[in-house]
Image 1 (cartoon, rainbow, N blue to C red):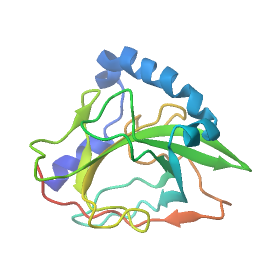
Image 2: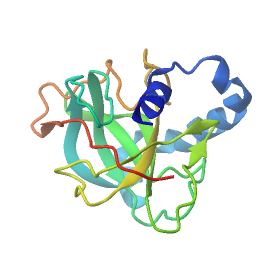
Image 3: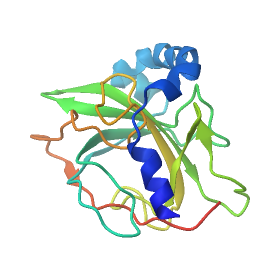
Length: 186
């Protein structure tokens, strides 16, 4: 079961994304305003401060994160319910010098007793379910997530959880995280 989950995260995002190109382009256009992080904050996307990155270490029973970074997550707790392709609840920024550059968006969906199937968007199943990403999200927050690298090319594919071209190097609040434990769910 875990093997099947991991394979889906590594496959590149080429031909399978083609039917969703117009939708992904519309999402990119809608998210452009958030290149200015201050507008994101005004729209209630709040910074987690830490710049998350992974060593690429593989651990049995844990999510596989290729070596690279996610970046600094700005979370909007007012966006709830089924994932909306035009309203990601997380914006991801890369610290570059003294600036933050928008690189990706993410949808995070909690696993609840009402969850009947794994969420998906753009023909892609979400990764998970997995424990929360400590120290920023408690382990008890079991969830699914999906990343989309709209503003920074990712050699691992648009929907890979990490991007080797994103860096937390030199950022005061860099967090090297361990792979997250996979959990049972639909």
